[in-house]
Image (cartoon, rainbow, N blue to C red):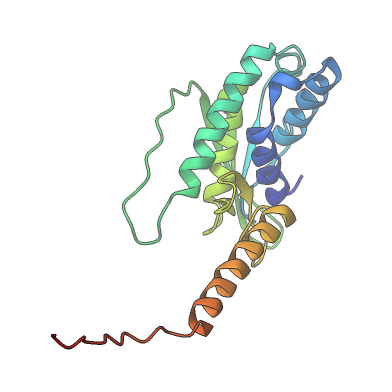
Length: 201
């Protein structure tokens, strides 16, 4: 998974209706979380900074549904916070209790370029949040926004303004109706305010 694909997965995960999940859906979700964390493999937020997550695979494959639901709530909260960060404005704070052991290594490649690696040993939920925070911070623009039409989270690509075709069409229809209503109001003839006075008898 690339950085973009990981954030896109986090947005999809946050929007899932887990109450409708069947047994196979829970298995797929656990597999997706394994790919998201890339256990013991470097996950890059930038070209020179990586994280490695050291978690027992069994902790993911046997994660209870209630734990996955709690992780989903925290992921949703973090993404909503990132979607509200203003440019040149006040900071947006997120409150999480994260328990982890962190380590750092630095290496140079053959060309002398320096690389930093962060080593994270933490429970599943904390690992997901740490990686998501790292990914969203490693680019000036996280890509996470709220659709102005349906108010759902989405990952913005390029010049997208809405989360998908349905909301785009709905917004265009509303805009057209507004324009048509303005044209109609301008084209209506104005009634003259002529008042006739009756003479007194």
